[in-house]
Amino acid sequence: MNAERILHPFPAFYRTDSEVLILGSFPSVKSREQMFFYGHPQNRFWRVLATLFHEQIPASIAEKAALLERNRIALWDVIGACTITGSSDSSIRDVVPNDLTPILTGAPIRAIYVNGKTAERYYLKYQRPVLGRDAVVLPSTSPANAACSFDRLLAAWSVVKGTNE
Image 1 (cartoon, rainbow, N blue to C red):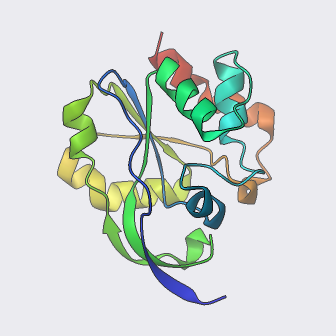
Image 2 (cartoon, helix red, strand yellow):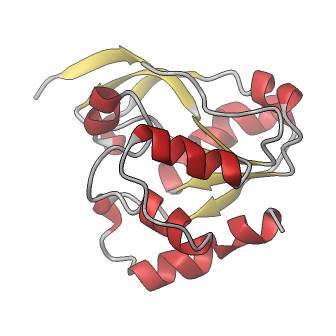
């Protein structure tokens, strides 16, 4: 598989009442195919959120969007364009960051979370200096982070629910 220069193919998800912003690094091949966040069936993101908020695991994009809306969660990625091989975070280079200001000025975001160490690394490099806002790093829900059990993910991600109560 060859490295490709890719622009983020779909928009941020947020509403004017979003209070939590969760940032990934850059969408996987499956997410790019589906044109929505966390599209890989083995990614535990949707299972974690559904469990935290005592909801059914969403299957369709409409169900995923509804879960986010009900719980005032915004989703976006730190990176707006990059050169990447497949879905490999370690291959990311030539990064152009996303502009987070539309979300932060358009919604009362109380907390910013990053999904995994790659998102944290790029947030600290590109976003933190511009925004002056810290982000809490959470363990990645990616199938590549198989060493982290679902129970450990759920315990760490429970801070997201605490922000919305």
